[in-house]
Image 1 (cartoon, rainbow, N blue to C red):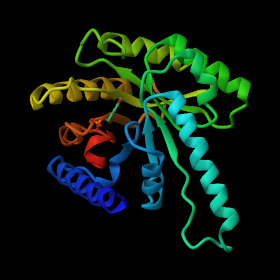
Image 2 (image 1 turned 30 degrees about the vertical axis):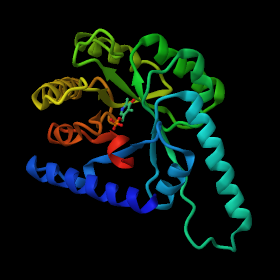
Image 3 (image 1 turned 135 degrees about the vertical axis):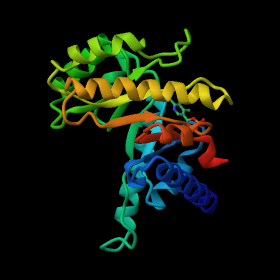
Image 4 (image 1 turned 60 degrees about the vertical axis):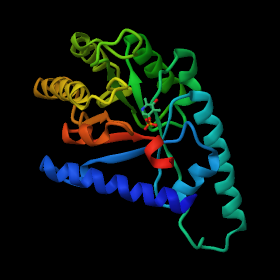
Length: 247
Ligand SMILES: *Cc1c(COP(=O)(O)O)cnc(C)c1O
């Protein structure tokens, strides 16, 4: 299993690097988030052993359970291991990529490193309030999710609503807006995906130009197994990949 994942990871990194060179970008500007929602926790352990620690989950409950299991095996390994351990112990950096309900925020905050799916002021306020209550030392890093494909069933902000929400979130002291996230429609049509990614980047550049979102606003989270190459060509700095990594 580990060997297969290592091969897939290398292949994906290669394709990302090629897409970067086509669009004159530095390959190190793209981070691969391994989306583990369909695989066993052992697969997450294998990723960590390979040194890959950016892990994405789409459901809070699963993220929490899996984190607990991983933390437990890390501490068990520490107890058993000679000092210092033969291989460094790598902890996951958790990315919440799915729709987030307000009543789950409190449980999620102590664990998560990035929330990719903020799409309302009420959710942003909930995160802000809970961050204060928990006394978190670092600001919570969030993406605004944009519905660039305009599909009714999709979560995310309407394209025209992003700027206004960003202005409001800017006033919340415990949040740090790090970028925009979008999902292209499930389609083989590359030009359709490209249109969505390009639209997202345009909004991103506009917000940056107006200096609304602060200095940390540097990321575009876009691209999944079917369309990450196109996403990188259009400026993605984080790609969220499941299927292509574990097949
Ligand atoms: C599942 C999921 C992914 C990864 O999808 P794959 O097609 O398996 O690569 C990426 N982003 C989000 C928001 C997801 O829910």
